[in-house]
Image (tube, rainbow, N blue to C red; front, side):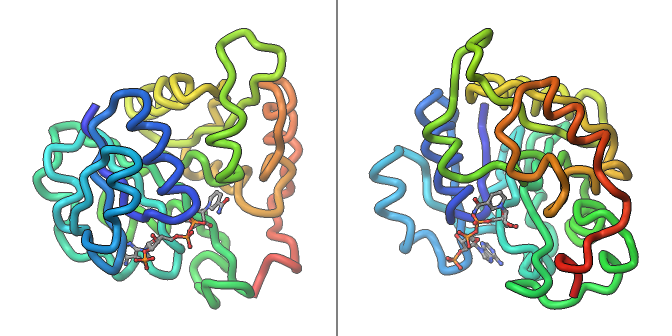
Length: 219
Ligand SMILES: NC(=O)c1ccc[n+]([C@@H]2O[C@H](COP(=O)([O-])OP(=O)(O)OC[C@H]3O[C@@H](n4cnc5c(N)ncnc54)[C@H](OP(=O)(O)O)[C@@H]3O)[C@@H](O)[C@H]2O)c1
């Protein structure tokens, strides 16, 4: 597939590594410009691009930047994508450590719904609770007893299915975590966040999530 990755840090860098290794055609962008991505491009064969170019012709775009920087993404950055574009959001809200207070999220709006409102496109929430290093170190073939499962949430069934197949190709099982209205179940400080568990364990952890955002994880 043709995949655009916006953000080339811990998660974006490792997704670039793994998706190129699987044979996908990856374009990758950061905030400072493609000239700063030559090492990653040389290592992986991905094409370094500007944010405005990242979605050109893409079937999948991954937005993997700090949440507070999502509003900086330029208007129309998803224009020129392939029909039926699927956007993956890996984002998390870290009010104290990084993002500052975002009132709508503090008032209960799921983080990914906030991101959708800013980018003007539905998202599928995936990888947000996955350690970046696990993308490199924990892929396992289907049926391997050590294979871990990742929750995937989103409103569009076909888009979610495509992302689940991509996650499977990357070496992980998936659990359908419902729609974006349910995606608070996989936000930071929930039982599933950072869990390295089986399908059964991830399913159980999603069900056990408390609706209230823990005080320690609020502004
Ligand atoms: N680290 C993890 O293990 C992990 C796991 C799961 C989910 N997450 C979540 O995934 C997101 C990304 O995390 P990360 O750890 O990969 O971040 P990171 O290492 O801090 O990297 C952030 C990347 O985003 C780019 N960026 C920032 N603002 C941008 C903008 N306006 N336009 C284009 N690119 C921009 C940065 O580019 P420049 O360097 O050029 O500014 C950098 O490449 C966060 O929401 C995080 O909470 C992280």
